[in-house]
Length: 147
Image (cartoon, rainbow, N blue to C red; front, side, top):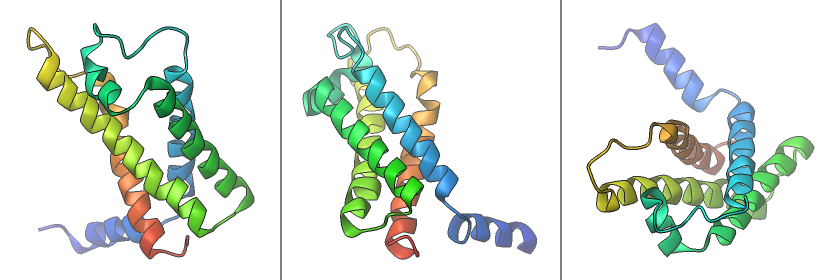
């Protein structure tokens, strides 16, 4: 059983705390992912098994454009305090879909295509956190004062 004061603090952090720093971190993460996906060269090559399913979903450039759109929309929304239904869709819904699709595709690709049974990429740790934070942002945006 969780002590009442810890449970109350968890409830406060999940439902009543300010989500702006979380949103800012997700926005910067999305912009960085977009830049890295746009880097010269081919990230989605056949020798990069972690990205094979992402490549089957859509091209590298499309992933980059969508992550940049989501990141910039979130930054704009944060800096100018702009809230609307279209920003809800681009910010929360698209963000959750992109982060989730990326993480699930990378891990599924790893387990489906990797030869030799090496461990999953440890660098995906923040991406997993990003996926859960984007989901939680969607929940909070849907039910909170953000809309």
